[in-house]
Image 1 (cartoon, rainbow, N blue to C red):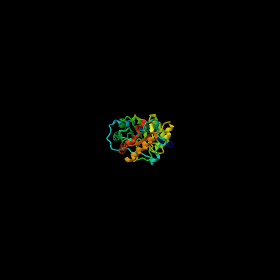
Image 2 (image 1 turned 120 degrees about the vertical axis):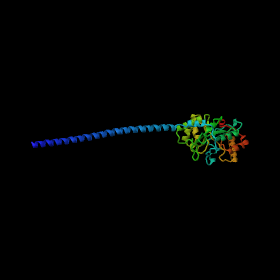
Image 3 (image 1 turned 45 degrees about the vertical axis):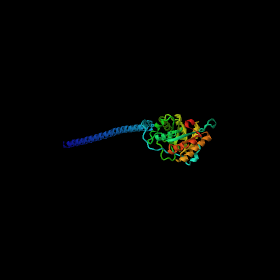
Image 4 (image 1 turned 180 degrees about the vertical axis):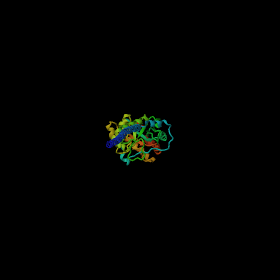
Length: 332
């Protein structure tokens, strides 16, 4: 009897041990399973949250990109709606080819009037860098049919388009990329600009200057010597029926060849009047422009709204009487 009781007790102890081990195994398996499920659900939630955040960021970035690529037409229009600002007595600077005598004559020359069919040779004088009220006032005081070429509006001269709007005829002085120029205009077109950007830029100019028929380049030694860039620009200008007059700020200009490829006439300036801001020198340049017009039937000269230039023109009435002074649209 004692032996049987011992055997029974031993069996009961073993059963309890097995039961405890089974319970421990079940608990461990439950913990592992719960941890695994939690991991996958946690990763899924984190992944979805991450995807949502990336989507929002990408959408925000695209909105910013769209806003950044829009032409600043509305901003420029607002500037025009403001009254004309008070301004300081300053005039924009210009770029010249050095040495200048290498480009004294255009490669093919502008369109020439037939000397046999006109009483007097024609001379068109373009006054560049017009941007302020005092510029317009000085030019009008000459009482001569010169052509004003206005710079596009900028922070330094926000009222240029509003001033142009008061004139019956004007040109736009289009800023183009230069090789060595310390103070480029903020709206300067670059050779790397895409065709779409140039189309938008010219469209904006047309909205700011709705009466514009011709532009000439402000600076532009780099741009006008780049055939691809000039092709893009002439194409964009053509879409708005705007002609291009080469200021010839470089002897390496490719504009004659580009215009020929488009089936258009090449038009360029003959003489810079005020490369040197000295009245006697400017008068000599005026006389040279008159001589070019008399030789070829017509000529184009470019000057700036400087006091010295205005005074030299006033003192050159006798020389100018040898030609018919006309606006650029009467010459072309």
